[in-house]
Image 1 (cartoon, rainbow, N blue to C red):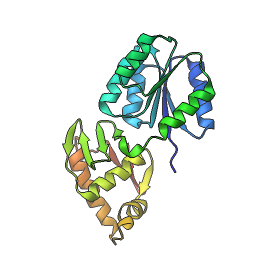
Image 2: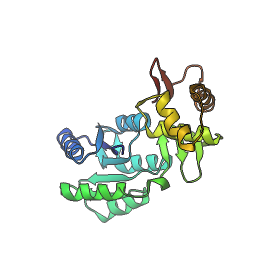
Image 3: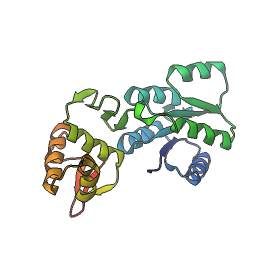
Image 4: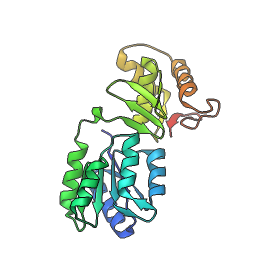
Length: 223
């Protein structure tokens, strides 16, 4: 089973390092940023399964960031705040925050709450990668909020790539996972044909793809 990835947006570098170390020791992958701008870039380029962010950041605040990300994709968001007021609690709920704790906090309690959030039925949560959103409940694909019509095979192929974003996948792996699971015999050319079709629908310039990229002599990678 793939490790869950947690994106930490925290400008206190000591706390950021401590959280990263502790969460990695629990089996999670972590990515880290110190500003809203950097955090958004990592989120859009690499994605994550849960966002752990500070309330106050050098170039913005966690409430606005939460509202923005929730408008794009309903991933679990956990906020750390130095303030413990009713106003903050109300604001957190209004922006769609899933959970929050005030500093100082218990690391054990934080990890337990994160584990609980990540146990939610992930099928209910859209899968996002940059401006591409996959609704796994309805099997629909969106680019910049506009629906992209995909065949059943194109949808399954895209889902496989996005679920393994950042990993180089060989044609053999793709065939085994996408086609062999259906009990259908196909040749490697089928992979290339369907990838070209996906690029024509998802890439801004299909001849120069930036999302679904060839890795010469090996296979493909979703960036």
